[in-house]
Image (tube, rainbow, N blue to C red):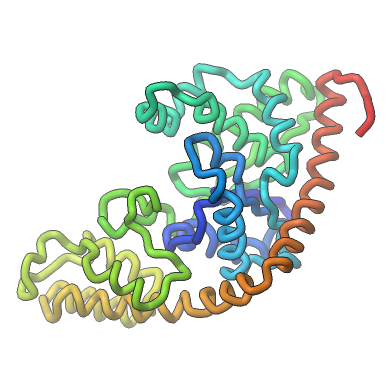
Length: 330
């Protein structure tokens, strides 16, 4: 089967933006591809972070992935820093990575503007990302639209390296994007992408009461000032969430009630909360089981890292040979 690779930063508990935009898709893809999924903790340190919280956040992310349906019998799941070959390949790629292209990256421009002294890790983020993908010779990468530019950089690095060191028979594949069905999930403010740093998320493990407290004030169609004002579901961010959490008949009813001012936005939100509970309750219950079995989570991650390293070691050995390094002890 074709091989896919994708990673997610350890921000702690998954939120519905992560789940809709990536993880739910990962669960389906693990049955169709040779799937390798990674909690990318090395990426998490490219900006200021709480070192004491990183282990907990990494574990919480792993639990969220497993609770969502990532099956260790179907996919390899591991923590990035547990496979040191990621940083080895990153350094090899650093030797050929074009500085100008790194400086033109949209994410670098956005993040560097927030720093008086720009950490080099922000600049080199795409090189590590390329190493993550190419280390496993991945054919496809499930990504959202915001990551397409970085994936194109990975393809460019593969071409550059192949031209320099493996011209006769290209070694690295040029991975293609596998765009997720839910390409961009806006936060509860209806304006920015869902992000914990912006405080506009709903965690997939939050209780129904917590979910409702966040949904209740969430932004809807700005034209609906009063309950009697007709609305337009096509510009309502919460109606977009209905498309993911509510059955088709409910979506039709919600749209009609909105357009005719048949009910207020709170009624729409209550139905959305019900649909979210149906989808998220089994995940929440599974997460509780996993949280009570930390040694089992550690075992899954350790076995995943062992499987990942078996692939990674072969890649590094091939790369070192082609780059002309002197053979030595493994």
